[in-house]
Length: 215
Image (cartoon, rainbow, N blue to C red; front, side, top):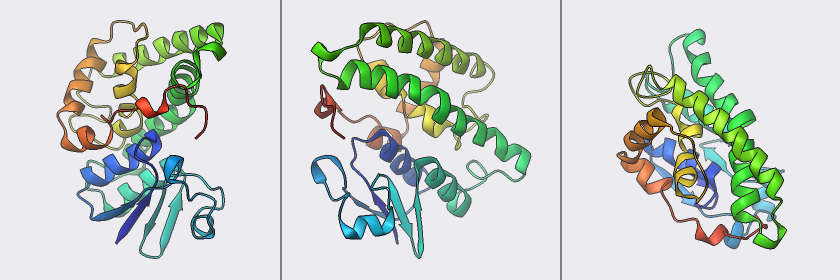
């Protein structure tokens, strides 16, 4: 039995739950972190000594770090849409996973969502928020350009490449922030919103995080 630890309002946990449902996996979700606590317990630290979510246990295998979990689930349980047949084809998905982690998520989640939404208004650094918004504009325009050629990041069908960047879209479009015209991303977002797993795990209210600096 696969077990997934983490709070549902964590966007990293949402990625894992979304993928698990797309792969039709049978799993148990165990809330952890935030109001659920438990990250400093001996049981949890035995799984992840860093005390961070998400964490999965698949039989005897324990995996932490979100994108390592995504890669593991795709490799262990994915079909050809999520586990490519050649290293070259797999590298296309891996590039988008790494790009999301190193470029998009720091700009949006680290800069805009954290700086604008999770930081109390009287502590806002407006100049830093503006810089993050400008960086997001550049990055989402890059995604928009790529999506002009195919309905999903990896081609004609949803695949592993879509999970990290796609998980940003609900909050990106729900926040009251300026956004550039992104017709291809908006069409991609509509396709994602039609998926039950995306509705269930990504399109979740996040008001509990407003003005909250604590994890």
